[in-house]
Length: 484
Image 1: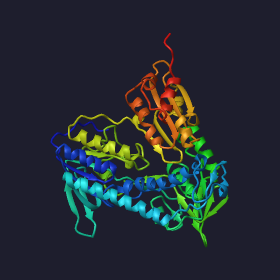
Image 2: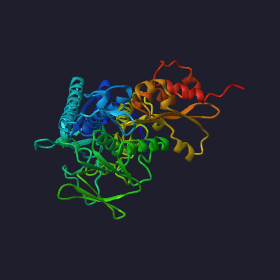
Image 3: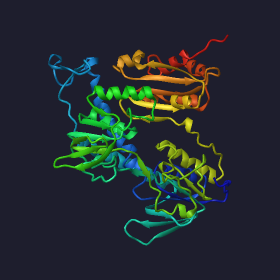
Image 4: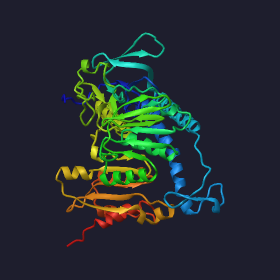
């Protein structure tokens, strides 16, 4: 990276992209006294709010309600029918008929919430004095941004003391199989569906594919998940991924492992997905979830001296600097971690650095991540695979969720809490939570990892009885080593 210190005179900040990395950076820069202009092509919040995180998690919330009803009969709850008329379910519970999904209404709510969140962000930036320009922006050197506004007006030239690039990424498509928004879909196009697909093929078993496959399966759709790897979620904790795949299969989902999709095409009444081994999978719709491409080409980055990786991602250091002096980058376009929380932190760090505020460089092991399947999978710190690859010494203990008294009361069966710790120092190195609302339960483990707490520190803190978080303290107690 180019060596540079903070420019304490920098007052004009131009931010290219109004997603989490951009708007969070704008707020920090304004609080530090800078003049800030945000250039955004879609709307404030970017794809995270308008087509990605907010819409997908809103859809998943509807699906989560449906999965919750699966446990209802086991708790003695019946929906609309006498208990004598209920029928046995696959898991042995009684399932009451009569529950249906209005996908048009679900998607209408999804998009309304996304629009409302975008409007809230715009209003917040307006109150803080941030100038917003809607249009396509590109760099003209490291200190100038040229914007083509919406509506075809003349280009606007913005001079800057520093520029933050936070342009995100776009869905990758299958070669020769462009998405049409009707039958062959990316995850940004699902919300135009007015009725549930008869049979949905999901290509890609990473986070996005697993989340949507699980959600549509819960909504009652016949789902086939096509995975090129040995299991779903190949980059995640092996125990968590194995448990989730088992849950998927138990709910009737078809999972095709070691099956690489070669292409997809429209048929008379649906789609056909060709696999590399010659097999063909037919369905009514296909969702392509095979990763994303950084939106970094053609916006003047390399001409301004910004180095791009072979993948197209912007190369940055731990305080979000690029190789061009005065140009910073944040979010999915950097390839650090494709999380809204990471984008926001990168953007905040960039502004703190360029404006001379105290800076704590980003530490990837401190980042908590969550997969919004049912059950959710939350992780933080070192993974078991990373510890093994590095030859690190560690001890680990896993406690099934089914042993937790609160989980028993709520009818929860699937999940566990797992901690990794140093065998001598007893410092918490990482953790995994598989559970409903794992995204909430991971926080105490995140605190332990971030502040280098020991298992005894975690074990000695009070938890509510009964509570799901009690399992975290119990796992920590299981890792305690008596003093000799």
